[in-house]
Image (cartoon, rainbow, N blue to C red; front, side, top):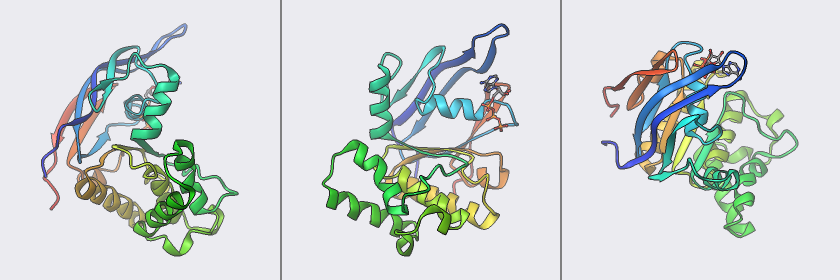
Length: 235
Ligand SMILES: Nc1ncnc2c1ncn2[C@@H]1O[C@H](COP(=O)(O)OP(=O)(O)OP(=O)(O)O)[C@@H](O)[C@H]1O
């Protein structure tokens, strides 16, 4: 499947941290990621991968340049509007799962749905349960995070990221704490999500073997985009 229309774009994105000695996190990034595309942001440690992901996810704001989500320039949005776009259109997965420890898996998945408040309680529960089933967690809905394995916890975090049917899932080293089998499962889930449902997935990874399984590798060095290669497309 070729990449569809642009869903997430960076235009000349630069982020400088001000201070006695200013730090440039990323500089002049131009990037366009299409619908249903599974992309990896790669590069050496400290090259700006997480910084770029945070900017693309509207969790940080460029010093200059802009990020567009489904063609909408987000640079003039208020913090409240940015939060709304994140809630409605973006889903996040981090290296650490950040599940609420006192909540069950199901209740953790319900959190973004309750914030959006678009469905009835019954609809939300049905959808949350169905997401857990899709992620092979159907029997674990009532367990708390400490009753689940690391791989299961990360899959609950993915279910939570998908709660509001986001256009884009952004993941920052989502396999950093997983063994290779569970890491592969996460990447299989992402690829399936992108290619089957048209959800765009952008993940930071330093794992070459996993990056090679994506549709596109975006390579950063010293905060600059030095290459964007179409990978041999997985079947
Ligand atoms: N708040 C900050 N203050 C000062 N320097 C920072 C800050 N955040 C990031 N940096 C620096 O900016 C650069 C880019 O950081 P970033 O975390 O984006 O890189 P990365 O490629 O994700 O690294 P890693 O693979 O090690 O996680 C690094 O040199 C980092 O030390």
